[in-house]
Image 1 (cartoon, rainbow, N blue to C red):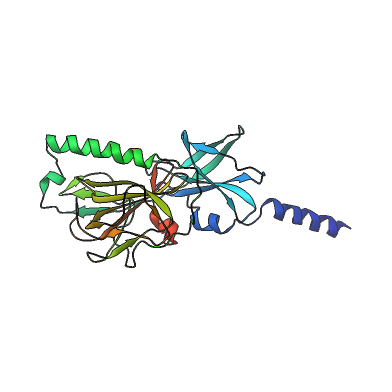
Image 2 (cartoon, one colour):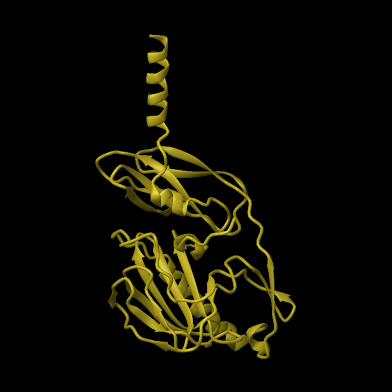
Length: 275
């Protein structure tokens, strides 16, 4: 009888602490610049949640329970962070530490290190335009969270690098670079809608694709843009072609992923994250 009691107790404990599903195992890397997956329960209706007063992506995992997929800013400190759910709950999750290495880049065009006053007028205007696109939060759920690589090629510069241009430190690397040749087609890693196209001082030819609920891809330095504003793209649809426009030392594919208006490591979404 005693054995039966402990078996029932163990079974109940196992059910309470069920193994995380595929999405959680893939995406849960709660470090600065990473992603936290926070369980929200298994109610009939989808809850909503906010982190640092911004709405976050919520999906049902494998038809069982709801989870929040939260982008963690690169400048976050390690320790407890809090998610606020619409039913009044406040859920804590832990953020760990991660070290990002340095990258030193030599640029011939010194204006792309120390822009002129007229350059700054353009840069600030373009920054506001791009920040507005990152803040889009459409209601539809992403078609997939295990992303396809936008190009087939080796990873070069990783996310989060502390970057020094001509010896001067600038913003950390906010995306992931692939070493591929000019003209290589860039494919949408998931279905989405084109919400911004521009030719920018730093980013060159750029396209923003909204995948749903604040999950946004940005592709830049392109030689050619093959989409139009407002266009719906299927998974694998051609966004444009690899180039070296803007602040770039040579052709490569630069890809940003943003969650709740926070740039996170795209390697997480293609199963290539390195702690």
